[in-house]
Length: 389
Picture: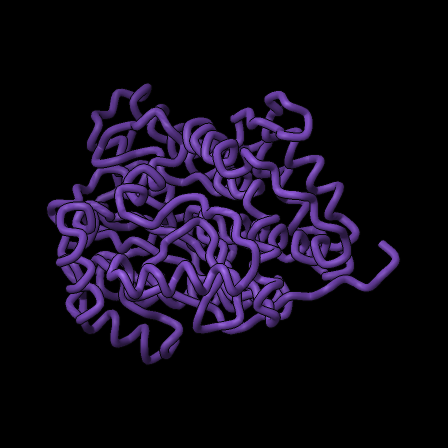
């Protein structure tokens, strides 16, 4: 790499589920004093989500992955410490192992009430969490150019972040079930190719004029440009239980954008969207053990091979940006598995030890509680109703 890297600022949003420390189930309703205490410590960086058993945090605008680490570590630790005072704990995973959506309450407020009204049972079922990374890109056409080029990489981000193998007490047989639930909503999934910003605006204006979608924030694609902020938002990833996994994906995103800035764009393949949708499905099914179709090679390639090649390709950009160690951890994620793999292992170990499904689910939640705060300034101490093997 002869030229200096192009540094894009990043901002990260994480959504957590709140569990009761006695039952390990989702809390039945929002705890107002808990939320007020979080707001007192973290201000507007903490917000409610669609369900009362969820909470969302957001970093500020970060120049480096290291700065994002500092903020996320502090916020995870703060929320965990406050939650413990109220008999709760946050878990960073995209679906709860056993709680049921029809036992949850949606959050009050105009936006959430409108979502519940417009999307009905589909919205009531959407009890899932994600992780979004915003990249600062000032020039509007550049946002579209980068979006087009980034699309084929989306299944890799999903594979590396898979954290939803269970749904309502059932092992789904998948590593990432969240996209199936979230995909019931309209305007989700892989975005199409746009020529430029003007075409993107023409699309949003048409949807607004016809009444199909009058609020562009309800275009929930896996990757979308913002009409309100100069950012491109990566939305395909699940919420990573390990803090360091979140930072690895942030490093990969920032490094990819740096590489895109110094290299010529390939012409988008005419089957790009169709092939990416198939690859996303494979990532949902098998996570880091998946094989994805390569348009260049016209064959299936293991995720471990694709990740290793991408890490090598981005190494110089990442090192220049100061996130080389975080990027290289992508190979570690492939080697040990994602949160989904660890959850499945914990479930199976509990079953092998003679525990029933409810107890096995509790064991998975215990694992998630500990992993969520690992790497922060707080540590989980299981002192309430721990299930013994």
